[in-house]
Image (cartoon, rainbow, N blue to C red; front, side, top):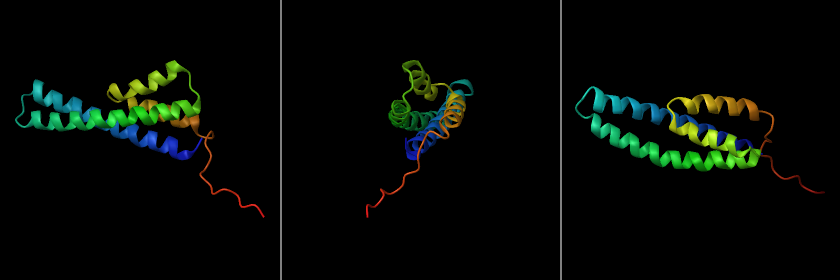
Length: 112
């Protein structure tokens, strides 16, 4: 497995996690605190999180299929982007688990 597969999963896990936390905070500001302008922030963050979560799903599924995870583990990782802060913990656990299982991207050897 290439390191880039893990790297792009990690980046999207953090981005998705941060956007989900921001979405939760903006929802609290909108509905709980009734702050002016919170509705606009909520809309923007919700759209960004929604689209980037789809990209996260693709990258997480790609990682899971290349790492040959069982179905339940793949579902667990895919759902981590829907639970606030879960993406951070799952990403850390997955990164530690896969640390020596990837190969560096190296140029093909030249035959003499």
